Image (tube, one colour):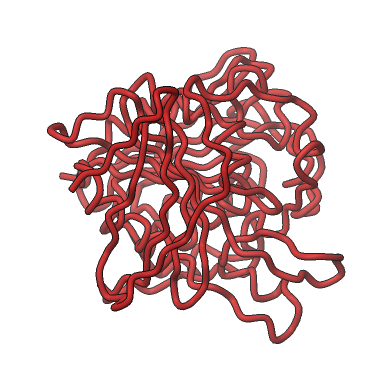
Length: 369
């Protein structure tokens, strides 16, 4: 695969050390009203009102330094240090930013899993790095986590530029004539650079997304990058909108874990539905919005509609695990009582939910065959 570039920012640890290790694409299904691509955020102080403790390893805050290979035909080996590392990757002549957290226990002799964390509208990789708990999970579980940043677009009726991911609904939100970036190519290129730099466990590469990033996971990464990613997760997004089950023409034997909060005002505003959302099993399955979401999602994942359910005072969780193709995949959906439009970490969820830990346990169950 032709890769346009490198970018390298050397991460430095407290001792000043550095380390360096020497498609046919699937058809993209389009669902008319795409989940939460219209969610907007003010940043950084107005994101959620709840600051989150940063990761255990000190962050490198110096700006990234970009480097582009002369031939622009080979992947690039990235310089890195334990902790946070900032990079700029050139894709189709466009500089694209991402952050890597390299755990202090990284061992080049052992295949290491990778998680890609996709942010929401008006956020960035840095916001996700500081506020999702994935950097701490990376340290605890000895995994590499990537935090890419979307492109800034002028949106209809909005001032300034806004970071977004290119989902099937983005074209209706940007000003006419705006060029949309190939974000799938960006993610593929970034992962290829990781593979030539680190000893990556190719059976354990996963993707998680929040809000617009969650919509990107469902509508682009599941259909177009299921050859790379073993399993997926998202928060604050779903196949909600005017699309019908018949619109889901692609069927992927992939696993997905989704979390929503009953008080998700951004989703409610974007979809024109009231809060609080349905919470109990019967309320959810009888709700036309969420019942249709289930139908579209299990159609995408090639699953049957039969499910198991667990619940307590803080959450209701559905598990759809019967495949139409005999595959070992599943769809898990959790509704959390009282949670708003946040990617829950320990201090941002009234129910004490830490999405990074929940999703990592889920990912461990679903490596590639």
